[in-house]
Length: 181
Ligand SMILES: Cc1cc2nc3c(=O)[nH]c(=O)nc-3n(C[C@H](O)[C@H](O)[C@H](O)COP(=O)(O)O)c2cc1C
Image 1 (cartoon, rainbow, N blue to C red):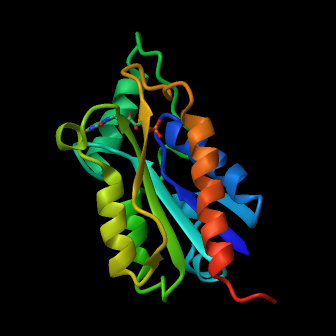
Image 2: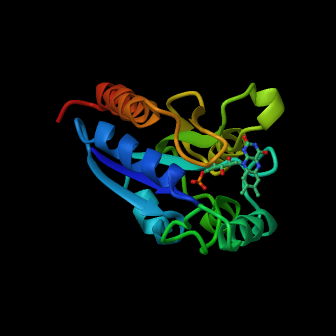
C-alpha cells in the first residue's frame, strides 16, 4: 500500500503531526510526507491512502491573509515563533482548487491542528478539508481528527504519540479493506 501525507504548516506543528502520522502508517504502507506544494495530482493518484492536514486559522482552513498574518507574527522582534521551511508556500484551499476531480475513489482522511478548546469555539480546519475531500471524489475512511497546540504554538504533550496511533489505525483499516494479493 502507498500512503501520501499532505501537510500545510506555518510554525511546524502540523508538519510534526504529519510526520508522526507517517510513522504510524509505515506499519502497513510505503509512506511519503510532503508539503502541500509538492503533492501534485500524479502523487495523489498513485496513492492508496491520502491523509491531508493543516492548521486552523480564523476558525477554518488558512487563507493567504491568515498565512501572511502568521508570517508577520513570527517576524516580530520579540517573537519566539519559527516558520516551517515550507511556510511561505500555498495553502490547502489553493491545493484543492488546482487538484480538480483528482480523488476518484482514493481512500482519505483529514486532520488539523488547533487550540484545545471546544470546536464550537476554535473552529477546525479539518471540517473544511473533509468537505473538500468528498467534493473532489475521495472516499473518507475516518472521521476528521484534531491535534492540539498550546498558546505558545507548540504541540501539547502526547500529541505526536496520538498521531502515530491514529496513523496506525488508518493504515490497518485501509489494509484490511484491500483485496489480498
Ligand atoms: C492567523 C492565525 C489565526 C488562527 N486562528 C485560530 C483559530 O481560529 N482557532 C484555533 O484553534 N487556532 C487558531 N490559530 C492557531 C493555529 O491553529 C496554530 O497556530 C496552528 O495549529 C499551529 O500549526 P502550525 O505550527 O502547523 O502552523 C491561529 C493561528 C494564526 C497564525
